[in-house]
Length: 143
Image (cartoon, rainbow, N blue to C red):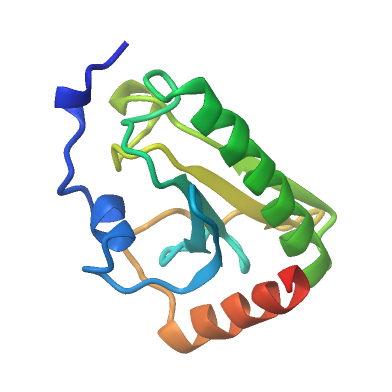
């Protein structure tokens, strides 16, 4: 288990949580936040993060995980509806060897359509107007 000393509070998600970096938020409660991924692999790609600091699932408090997964479910149902998806891909990576690149626990929620490949999670950012429009659609369903 990772110690709290291993958590880097300067990671990009910690900065988003503190409001130092803008995001297109779709959901927030006292313990979690959900916002549009700026490099979406499909339209409607949302990230769900607990506000409590932890590197990943391996060191997160079990109560944090319980609440976070309930929010993942809520967001998954919303994006499936909004984007008329055939399914929803949920991804969560733990440490570099598993593909984790931002060391704050987070879940990818990606609507999927039969026969449509995911785009690579590249360095190309989506247009902010597209992200804002997609966020608004999701917020409307969650309201």
